[in-house]
Length: 133
Image (cartoon, rainbow, N blue to C red; front, side, top):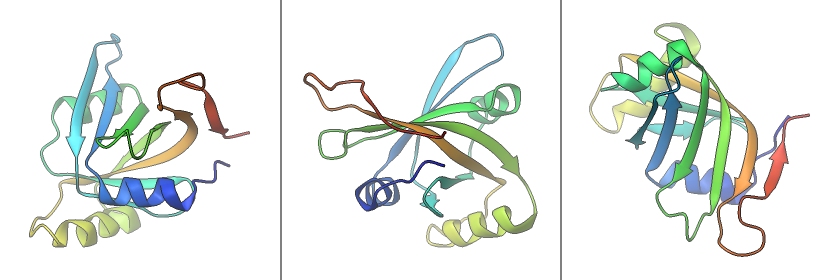
């Protein structure tokens, strides 16, 4: 299990993040996200409010990548596996997250983080920091 640091959790909870996906045909897509929450040391929930290509990609290929917009301050890339939920516990969490934006989500993207990489420039750029064993 990956164990995100408090610094990583804080940056994900507070920053705009970019969610990268790819279709089954390997066509990439990236989209900014703000309605999200770190649930525990390895789980992030992102609300589906306006997803089209992103959702289609996740359903075809659940492997995703996340990076924060402020990568100078929080230089991390997260890779994981996504699931989509339109009811149940995860959807209820998404509704709680979206309440701050006066929205009701269409669904919840639940991402289990499997790897974390360094994005800071220099010798350690791209270095694997955490990995699910």
